[in-house]
Amino acid sequence: MRLYTRIVELGSFSRASEQLDLPRASATQIIKQLEAHLGTRLLLRTTRQVRPTLDGDAYYQRCVAVLADIDDMEASFSQAARDPRGRLKVDMSGSLCRLVLMPELPAFCARYPLIGLEISVSDRQIDLVREGVDCVLRIGELRDSNLVARPLGRLGQLSCASADYLARHGTPRTLDDLDAHRMVDYLSASSGKSIPLEFTNGTAVVTRSLPSTVAVNSGDSYVAACEAGFGIIQAPAYHVTRQLAAGTLVEVLPDHRPPSLPLTVLYPQNRHLSPRVRVFIEWLQGLFAVQR
Image (spheres, rainbow, N blue to C red):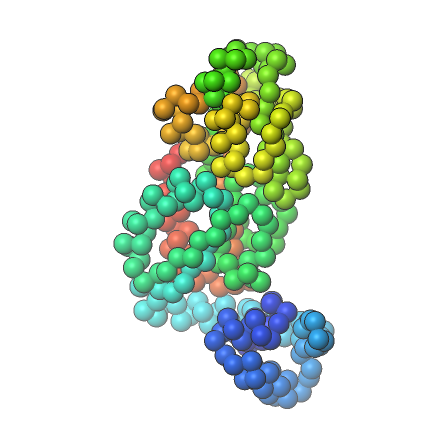
């Protein structure tokens, strides 16, 4: 049943057998025996794709529920529930990893020494099941998704510019002053579209798109372009703390700060939440409660 569900989710015998550490030939033989036992064909195979039949899809749905019940039962008695272990694969943005998570990660590893972490950094939308990722951390509003989403809190944002840029162009004191300024253009990693600046004005949120010379699609490049004097940016406070303390960046329009950004951890809804994923999410909730 575990092999069958992985083949359906990955669309591949070879990927499923690799994840479960089985020889490819053994995986094929196991599925043949399963189909013979059930008396029905579960999978349609072509040279490029493996997909379930109608019976196979119904069997898959039941397998997922049964396996989740088994995992819950075994986890309540197993050593893994008391002493989580195994490989944990996580995806998040590079700046969040470098500036927030990584400095605090030794404490997690000291508490759970049998968990090995594999961290990938990206802002793109990924297929957690196909890429074998246990959970992802995402900043900002989420698009519709079939993933389970657990909020971790909200991240405050600041508007800022380099001291050199402000010396050349002046410091904006009101929202109307922005007409004489430039911004670093941030392009969405998912859509490629420019994201305008946002300012709170009482209970309203005002958006502004300013002229730009440089456009980027990563948080680190965004801050670097600001430090180089290309204009105003809006970034999570954690990303510019060091530069503000050093005076290379200066906050502007503090009375009109951008809205805070939601931070969310997501994981597949049809996968049992293993003890190692569970304790990692609980640790993240504690970490970002302190960050706020």
